Amino acid sequence: MTKFRGAAAVVGIGQTPYYKRGTSPEPELKLALRAITAAADDAGIDVRDINGFISYASERSDPAKLMPALGTREVTFASLVWFHGGGLPATLNIATCAILAGQADVVAIYRSMAERSSQRLRVMVAQNDTSSQYLVNGLDSPAQILALRAQRIIQHHGVPQSALYAAVAASYYHAKKNPNAYGRSIEMSPEIYENARLISEPYRLFDCSRENDAAACVLVVSAERAKHLKQKPAYILSAPMGTMEGGGALEENWRPYYATAGQVELAQRLWNESGYGPKDVDVAQIYMNMDSMGIGAMIDHGFFTMEEAGEFCRFENLIAPQGRLPINTSGGDLGEGFIHGMGLLPEAVRQIRGTSTNQVPEAKLSLITGGPGDLMSSTALLGAAEAL
Amino acid sequence: MEYIFEQHKISGAIEADDQFWRALEEGVFKLPRCSACKTWTWPAHFRCGRCGSWQFEWVALEPQGTIFTWTRTHYAFDRVLERKQQLPYVTVVAEIPQAGGARVMGVLKGEDRDLHTGMPVRGTIDPPSAQSKWYPSIRWEVVR
Image (cartoon, rainbow over all chains, first blue to last red; front, side, top):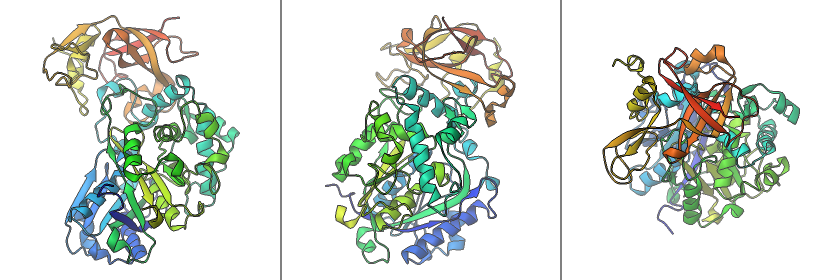
């Protein structure tokens, strides 16, 4: 048993509404303030007591800008996780480490996005770090680069397009029951999916997440402190980050495996540290900037093999409450809205609390996978007290 | 020699591939190999992670390989708007067996029906143009 396992817990969640990108009535920084104050209220913690601030990727609402408005007494720890959406679950890792090492007591993990305050997410995320090898050859967007991975998983590994559709259908099915989901009124059927416009083959419109304006925050404290707060704690059992040998900034030269999510080794560490395996997981929030990448994440985590993907990824298997592995129960990145994946964290916590609008009965183990195929990624398992 | 691409340098990423572009602009397809342990290193880097050497030799190769993967782009994305008039276009990631399986990207030329991973491709070199951001570029064509 590592020191890390169960040392900290998520005790507060806060989210703004999701807006169509570029239409938020409030700037990015104000959205961040709203999410953080909402999370503090939810936890019953004085917002001035937050002394740790963690985000990831291209976040611009830094703690220095936030603290005057939060009334922060002192920032004792602040960190930004590399790289893009791959850093999402790793924020829980950094928060736990900071708390374990005595560097912070109350840590806010947050992400805020409003296009008018910055620019298109798909441009922001690149951080001017896209190599000439891509740009010279007409490749710019994550949609195109991940389409290359999708083509490989479909044509070379034989994963059927129906598996991708099932993930889309499950996401929008869940979104329909989530009054806060941006995509709650979108109808989905095989015809709608197949007739949507092509973006970058094999991806059509609904294979891709949209970009939204919104912010979300979760608050992390020590397991000891969590016991005395008002919400049911979601304990952080494991949240490994990293990249395997043969991965990294390799411009489509990833080895030994390419078409999934680069999370095989991460998942192995997750299961080792948590003491659980894929069969134990009750519910999963699978990062799906693009659907096939999420299928790859589930393969990397051992939920099924390439060969089993078509059989496993059927609509009825992926939905709450009774599916084999209910995924993206808030609607996820595809159906709820996309703020660089940050919506997945609060939903994973709601599942442990029992307050999701697509609740899996008595969920004890709740998985969040990070940006798949990212240069560096991460994954995390949250557990109820009974799972400690 | 004055290279056109150097006047239009794209910054970001590892940026150890100047020799690749210079060779293409001279009309030659070259990939880097560690001078000491002969490991192909692609994308190009500054140090061989296997043996620690800082020396690389750029080896001229026949541009031949197979389709590792590909995508056909239908949408004019922000930073590649120069290709808007060419939509849809296909970008191929070709695997080069003579270079230890290095995978090299290029825009497809010629017939683009029924594309599939594993198809053999042959490369030709296009001079710098607006579409390729004033870089020379390798163009893959399916050998049918």
